[in-house]
Length: 238
Image (cartoon, rainbow, N blue to C red; front, side):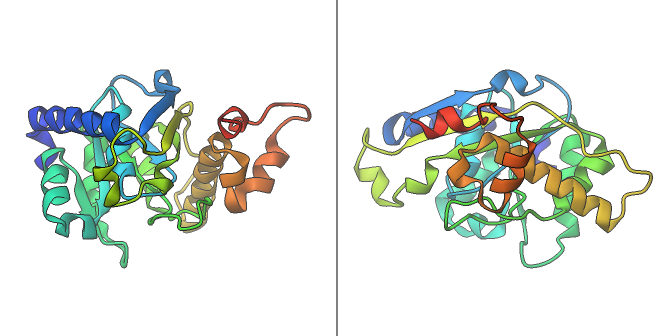
């Protein structure tokens, strides 16, 4: 598999991404990196606001991350080359892409960090929407911990004009939550996978500012003890 032979090119691309972030966005403000296990297979799950997200998240992390990205991104000449250099692999969002799911499972079994966007596509209204069950199925099949991520600010990146306006880009924040596992079940059914997916989305929603939680806003609010400070409150106040 390609991700097994590209560690050198991976870090070269990551440093290039970090240079671009320095030029074209403010921040990124990163918190919770200590929650990311340093070794072993893990699944990183994030909300999705911009095509830059699959680059920004590996750019702020301290360990190698393999990204499952929509197949359309592999048709863009420069982006496709960068993605292949970092070992990313495509997924067909229009079908049950069993091949991509098998690759994702193998990434985790190989002890690497897998990045997935459970919503399956960018959120056009900046709100968190329901996720698909592929992530929870991989978590059940591998037994790997899940690390939730909340990213904000990338929705304001003005492609492609950003590249002619350095140092005045949007402020981007990335928050990593604590690892968790899907609920234990005797058998992984479609109902169990759906419930686990909802649990994943709730963990992401808790890290987001309240204004970005979408259909999970009230459910997160109901889970918070009375008088507590919401997890994303400080970020929203910026």
